Length: 296
Image 1 (cartoon, rainbow, N blue to C red):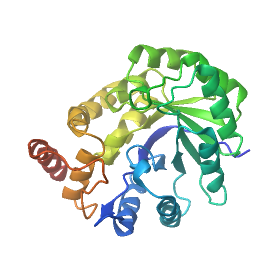
Image 2 (image 1 turned 120 degrees about the horizontal axis):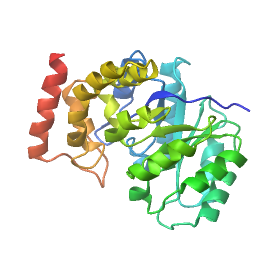
Image 3 (image 1 turned 45 degrees about the vertical axis):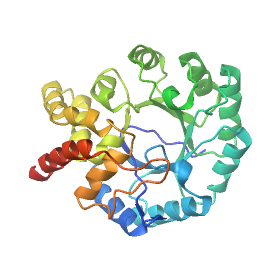
Image 4 (image 1 turned 135 degrees about the vertical axis):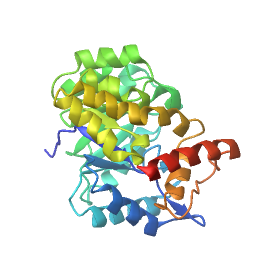
């Protein structure tokens, strides 16, 4: 069984677009940029990657390009989600011929299954692969919460569910999960503002959209805490934490793409409908963040 231990900063990569098409030129530029900055791995086709708007043939082309550019230098995980267990399982199976390291599988959205339905869903999906599954709990987007007891049952009974992306926004639930999680289950926070708090309380790392910016500083925070250098970790965190609320002030990844465009990493800040573009007011605030980053 091909199961990896996950720890550190994972980047849920944006999907760049230009004139309506996936911008492979910008994708290659992003991948070359990030693979040398100390991140632990990449996640493609997650929420930040606007996966619901990307057609299956585009998805496979995007993953193939990423595998070509990364060339084994970084682990690469693919987001696969939906509210039909059969379709999600088929989605995972469709990537098995590609050399990806595993899958980020979000809880089924909209139909709001009970805990037993969630367990059966993840068991069925995980049964399509021997690669690592990262279960993704983001109830404010999906309408369903993956309770800690359910997560622990999955970890105990499904050998390749070895990580959880915890994006509940509920610090009490997150701390309970961190307290009770077995050593072989990596808890990766998906709540960017709680990154420092989560690592300090035992999280293995994070899957963080805001780590597209000041990437090495996000990495420094985790490394400093791992080496019990608390003051260094605090100083690094204070240098980046103030920008995070602004990056989520309007729908992700619109603000993030605007910044990446202004930094010259992608050709366009374009998103696909139903997402549009940042407001003029927010653009001014983001320009301030870009200026600060450029001055470093």
